[in-house]
Amino acid sequence: MLRVEETQTPVTFSPELIAKFDDIVSRYPAGKQKSALLPILHLVQAEFGWLSTSAMDKVAEYLKIQDIEVYEVASFYSMYFLKPQGKYVLEVCRTGPCEIVGAGKIMDYIEQKLGVKEGEVTADGLFSWRGVECLAACGYAPVLQIGPEYTFYENLTNSSVDTLIADLKAKAKN
Amino acid sequence: MARKLLLEHINVPGINTFDVYRSKGGYAAVEKALKTLTPEEVVEEVKKSGLRGRGGAGFPTGMKWSFLAKPEGVARYLVCNADESEPGTFKDRYLMTYIPHLLIEGMIVSSFALGAKVSYIYVRGEMMPQIRILEKAIAEAKNAGFLGKNILGTGYDLELYVQPGGGAYICGEETALLESLEGKRGNPRIKPPFPAIAGLYGCPTVVNNVESIAAVVPIINDGGEEYAKIGIGRSTGTKLISAGGNVKKPGVYEIDLGLPVEEFLYSDEYCGGIANGKRLKAVVAGGSSVPILPANLFFKTINNEPRLMSYESLADGGFVSGTMMGSGGFIAYDEDQCIVRNTWNFTRFYHHESCGQCSPCREGTGWMEKVLHRLEHGHGKLSDMDLLVDVSKKIEGNTICPLGDAAAWPVASAIRHFRDEFEWHVTNGAEAVTRNYGLAHYADPLPKKEEPVA
Picture 1 (cartoon, rainbow over the protein chains, first blue to last red):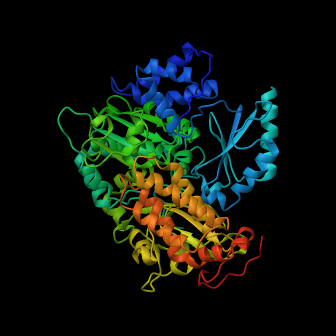
Picture 2 (cartoon, chains in turn green, brown):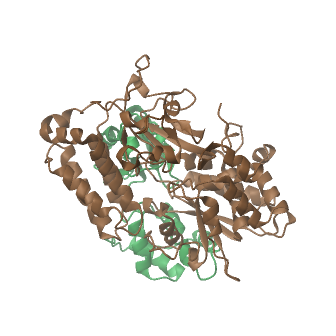
Picture 3 (cartoon, chains in turn blue, yellow):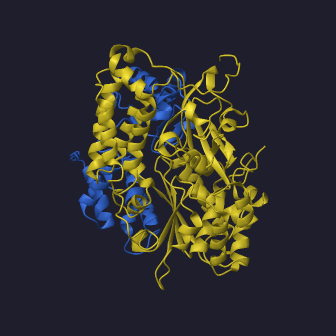
């Protein structure tokens, strides 16, 4: 069930972001600007980290569609976050082929290492994690991805998870 | 070494750039098609090739193309389905990552054949790196005059765009994909009308898988008849197989259709056998949606003929003792894998990915997941197996799109072939939580090769 997270923070889209929206809309025939919805939501999420109601309403206004048309799409697709996340969201593939080579153990390890349950954010705001369905990388399993560029980390082990988390912590400090 | 039509140059340094791809004979198919063939002749070559859709359904590509309606003054679209999400399948990711221009070249030739002036490649949103790669390749091709206005001076115009998805397996179904491309939820449409009549924006549209479109390039270069000489029977050409699970060498392999499954699994050119010196228990040959087969039914058909990697041979025996080619997502399970757990995992996947439009699928996948969860965790009942089969039968064939069937088959086949393992989970509930049933009588009948345990 969709629960639209209420925030009072109004959202503004920069002229640079609007220019990117315009470029996407130009790919479709006149009057079919709604086709730009999914790519635009990715850009908005990359900018703000998640999709707040005010951000979605702004997108609806830009595309000249109803607010509900944005909410129903944002809540249907698994990549869109409808509540705030950690700066880095570790998304671990948990489907069949990853599972049989240890995805479950990797998720247990990440949970223990970060000290938060699936979907929760660490106290420093840096990390959250969740299991996701097949990422089409079964030959390199277990795998995880980190948005907004969806960088891939393959053939995971506990020690490669340690390295990854340490690297991200260092990156966040700089 | 087997011949390679798609992956011939995959290891050439810089093959992901236009210049290197071009220097290896790339874009010759565009020159040949646009300068020397009519669109109808391109369609004819693809028909002659016998190419069957590589996304999973295996429908002949040339025939699909010939169904495209061509009303005057109405735009036509080609949409490439790069929403690769079938568990076990990762060939399109591989192709787009390492040799993106092959897909771009195939898109240009195919768009020309269909009379499309604007074409889209719908890539699953999680493949953002691949989206960047394709966008770069498109810019390079455009810069070289292979895209845009008046391509190669032939008067043919084509714009090509990459569209990201939002993370939904269902968008691999072609009408759900079109809905998604129109900026909506990925709910499959009721057919007819088929996309060939009313697809994207209500216009005639063809949706083809990445590998199918890439295969158009060698078909045009060598001719459809040459392509059809490869393979066996109605399984013509080469096919990319994604090998994963407990094989020694996971990866993407291009095979001639008709290769014996034993050779594919055990030869060092391909999977190299089972990892860690273990024995094979079961195989999912074409992605999670196809029936799982125990090893003892996999290598030989019911008529005791060697089973081949072809549409017909894999399906030999129907669902009683056969399976399907599907998308070529090959998952091997070793003796330590639990079939109940795997079936539960797949069912959770289908429950998560059901779009919710049809009740049998929306509710049925959820109930199957619950029952399988209790079986896996030692709380099942002996009647659960019949219950699961009953639910799966009520989903199968009763939904708008094939996701329902895809959710039903893995469950029905697992119980058909591994019922004793399911029963053991009930009768030995406590033990089933701590250890697996093991190989039982499902072992592959081939003599075990001596190899050191890693």
